[in-house]
Amino acid sequence: MDNNKNIYVTDGQDLAEKVEELVESGVTDVTVNVNTLNYTRYQKSHDGLELHPVIDGINKAVGKKLHIRLAVGLQEGFSDDEILDFLQLTFQHKYDIVFMPTMPYEKIKAKMPALRETEQEFEDVEMYKYPGSVGRIGFLK
Image 1 (cartoon, one colour):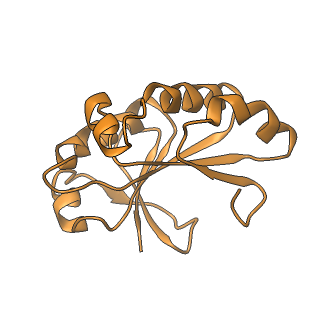
Image 2 (cartoon, rainbow, N blue to C red; image 1 turned 180 degrees about the horizontal axis):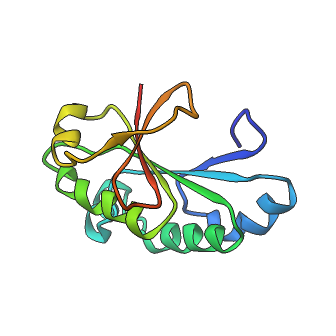
């Protein structure tokens, strides 16, 4: 659990089992740390763990009206080709996709030229929105 009692930070592996408990305890936001949404890559980078429990947990959390923030640690040469996949999620879901400083932000932003800065809700994150999206893109400062 994060220092703020309303935010739960996880790798997502056990999120589905904890969603009810989180809602009952007053959690409103869930941050899931991910570096890829590719099943094979996820297994390789997580000692054989499966991605599907993470996806199931996110879906269950959304079903319980919890706000989702994906903290994304892209890696050059490993998952940097997924930038637009994460952007696409903001058109389908009201997620905040926040990129971690694991690769130069200029390279990420170059793939999303229509990003428009939004009002800052977080001191530690620059938030942007793509025209027509329901979710947002962020960059950890």
